[in-house]
Image (tube, rainbow, N blue to C red; front, side, top):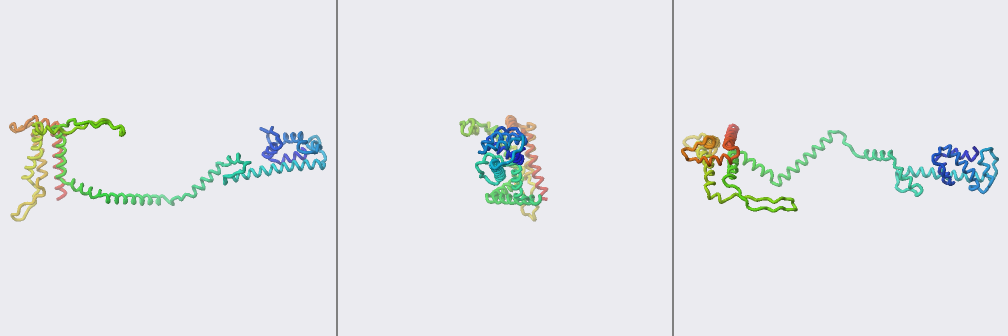
Length: 342
């Protein structure tokens, strides 16, 4: 190649492309660097008159034989050299600006379209690594465990203070104290029997209907209340009297007179009892009456109406066997308390 081709050989492909664009040479797509050098050299040779006023510049690009440089040729070469240097400066500047866009959001207008692609995965990875290194990490798992325990204790203390201020602790203690007695346990058993018997002797009747509420999405609800007119009939008093006699009155009388909870006294002073009604005697007598009347249909000479017996058996949960289970619970609680007091 001639001297002008030497300049093209020293240029990178990006610079050759930039030079081709500056001299309006567009047919370089898909060309390798050497092919682009040859094509660009031929284009400059063919259009040498457009880049210099000296017509003797054309023979400089011909490859047949070198031509002695003349002053006019030197000026043409100087012009091409200046273009090449200008292209190199623009390419170098563009590369520097592309790198600088990682730290700045403002780019020159000539490189704005290329700067959008400068965020590389490597830069993002370095940024994430920098962020991760700035996050403080615990020195050991033990420190994390201690921190969790401290926060848990603080939360537990705050909850305890709130409960204490609201009076929940006092209420809970009072409720526990009231329920932790033999009398309370047996009273609950009797109340459960009475609740089931109420549905039989004082049946519910329709009273009114609560209409549906579209806002809440509820359906119409029928409200039923106990039929109090049954209090004026033997249908209520017959079964109720029989149950009260066998489950409350006779067992209480027996528990009062056969009270085994008395404490020994000195002299002729009256004995002191732990309970006014012996809870163990109450449970034993109630169990005997339940088994004989409701289990064996004993009428005691016609004093007990078997129709009432059948209604009570059908009303109470588990029938007479359920009542026997309740008396057994009462007896076990009484014995357990006696053992603890010994």
